[in-house]
Every structure is written in C-alpha cells, then in structure tokens.
Image 1 (tube, rainbow, N blue to C red):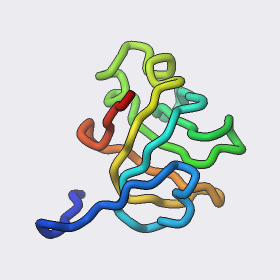
Image 2 (tube, rainbow, N blue to C red; image 1 turned 135 degrees about the vertical axis):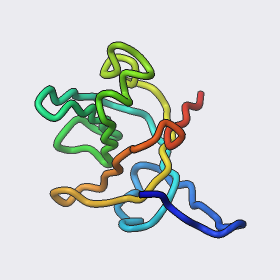
Image 3 (cartoon, rainbow, N blue to C red; image 1 turned 90 degrees about the vertical axis):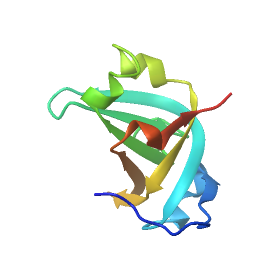
Image 4 (cartoon, one colour; image 1 turned 180 degrees about the horizontal axis):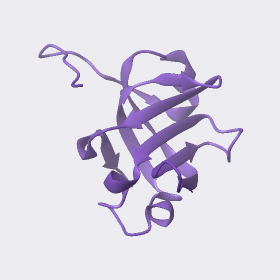
Length: 110
C-alpha cells in the first residue's frame, strides 16, 4: 500500500505530456487540468491534462471522498488549476494515468 524508496532517491519531475514514457515508474507529474469529470457510480473524480477526454495526455483519478476534502464541488475546484501529482504511472486503454490515494500526493503551484 505504501511506496518505499531509499533516502536520497531521486524522483523525476516530468510534464504530463511525457507521462507515457514513464509507465510503471514512481514520478512527479505537473501540468494544467484541462477538464474534470465526476463519475457518480464509482464516486471518483477524473482530472484530464492536455486535452478533453478521450484525447487527454494524462489522467489523474481521485476518490470522491478525498476530492471533497478540497472543495464541496471538486470538479469545479480542480478545473483549470496547475497541479503536480506524485505516484506510480499506470496505463488504462493506452493512456497514462495515476490513482491518488493520499492528499500528500497532490501539490498546487502557480
């Protein structure tokens, strides 16, 4: 459930556009959220970077209960914001994605 990496381990910081080159690696990805979508059936918020779905460069998935800690309307709160997420990059239907489990994995920057 938790990632372990030794002291001094270097975490690469990359653009959301380059996320497909780091599948299976622990990285920090930054970019602007272009579009958001809330799935009421699974209670998850999807953040799409680069372009709207299905042409997005990268997707971040946050559980609804965790996303609502930021705002009562997380789909509006995250839309258009510049964020950086840290975690393991996976693939779904040929597109890179990251599933966020903890609040500490998301950072906002200006």
